[in-house]
Amino acid sequence: MSKTAATPEDNTPQKVEKKEGVLAKIRAKSKLPDVDPENYILLAVTEDELVEAVESYSNDTIRVFDLEKASVPSGGGKQFQVTGGEVDVLDSIRGFILDIRPWRAYYKETFATTGGGTPPDCSSNDCVTGMGDRGIADEQSTGPHDCATCPWAQFGSAKDEKGDPAPGQACNEMRVIFLLPPDSVMPMMVVAPPTSIQAVQSFKNSLRGRMIPLYSVEVELTLDVDKNKKGVKYSKITIARTGKVSEANLDRMRVWSESMKKSLGGMETSQQVEYRAPEQVEAPQEDAAAAT
Image (tube, rainbow, N blue to C red):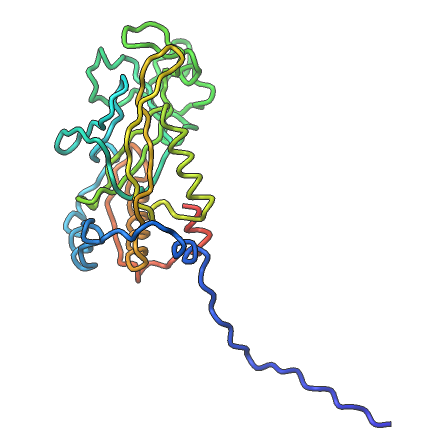
């Protein structure tokens, strides 16, 4: 009885067609227009010009508080107050968000007493561990401490401008938005007060859920006015998506965002700004990029 010879296994490598990435598909479906690179200095200059500009300041360092700062006014104002460069007031601010960080700041004296412009007595760049002088008697007042158990992080510890007890926290929890404006390669620091935290987090989570990196979307920040239970007006930030960076410039924006995160690693520390052309930097996996 004859046996049928076994068919040899075909070990020939099969050609696998490369599939389009998830992020690329999402971007292709987006109705947001591509931002004109000529409107942004970072996108308009050549790689050589950008590298040369960064290297020309290679001996300098930068701190977060050296950046231009946009603050939300009190009392229901609808214009951002910008300081650090030319003092100005703006109805809106447009740019690309490079990073969003939690932050706490505690001042022993009220704004009415100091007049502003002074660093906080104690602060935290992660809302977990605080550093500074809290001025607490009979307790470890300076050095690292747990923000969650700090008396100044408890609701009801705040004081109003007159120094009377207020329902909020003496140590304000905020969000710091590092926004790249059209006319600069350096981000500006937009401080979102407690009343704007929910809006900022909701925007960030919306992009995260869609696997869209922060740095890839152009936004416009404006101010809306609301009232608390006592009828006191306050301002809160609203964030609208206005455009997206083109595929041709996506790598540059990603690398610049990573560079700024590293350079501005600590709220109190000082670092040098570094930049390498995108082709010199290994591109991350899509999942890693989306988690930014």
